[in-house]
Length: 134
Image (cartoon, rainbow, N blue to C red; front, side, top):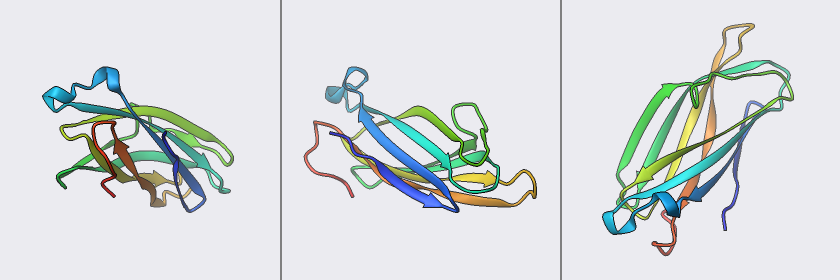
């Protein structure tokens, strides 16, 4: 069973749910793949734009990979007050569990002010590992 992980920064609520992809994984070869679904909800009064993101992906051995890039899934969404943006992406690991966390780098288009929104840490658990990393 998957669970939702949530965090709110400056009225921007991030909800994450991860899913182990058995059909894309090859445990016998040390290849484990997850999808994650993210919901970004602007609960504030200002329009914001997601410009970039930074991920920290940690495997079961404690090795952390840092990934930084523009936007998400090829987009830099603008969210007016009350708007929601959802997307699905994925990540592979060479261990049967791990976790991810990160930040979205936002801008308020009207003022040019920038700020970071926390992406809560979430587990990457497979049926091939008993227990959680965090």
